[in-house]
Image (cartoon, rainbow, N blue to C red):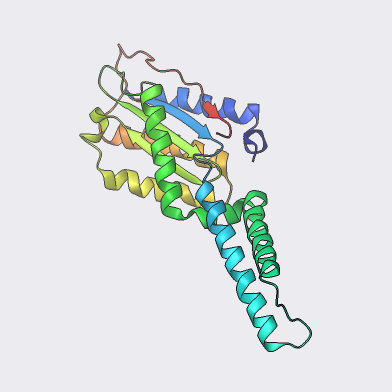
Length: 219
């Protein structure tokens, strides 16, 4: 997976422009992040290899027991065929992203994206605003997930349920691979939520965090 396949330079400019436009109206600071992948998920390879090996072993037993044209008596042949089936299972995970996602599991991927978003929240110092009104929007392409992390000043007025509902709404665009629209919609929705809760730009407001899209390729 290549980020450039989903976000062109023009797309990144649109996201940055959307952030600038939003911050002209709100007192919050929006930090957009795009990840190619939140984790490598080696457990997906192990799971697929075990399943492939098990299925190969069961197939050998069934064929050997219920057919006359295929009989095995050498345990080494059992081992070789089972091992090769395991390799095929592992190879499918490497070659096909949807199988890797399936083998990794929803919970693990969700947890991985959240952890990476939290790292960016700290590394990009989203917390370092005067009123603690930073908000990070993290999109991870491989997992097709979005995470919103708001700082203390915002979360004192905006409930977790509001953010959860927004994530659910944006996730539908992610599933349909409308990644640019998902990010732009997330920025607009965050702006509207902040305005509804009184985070209106003030005359002495300054741009405390860069509007540039933070992009990270494969880990």
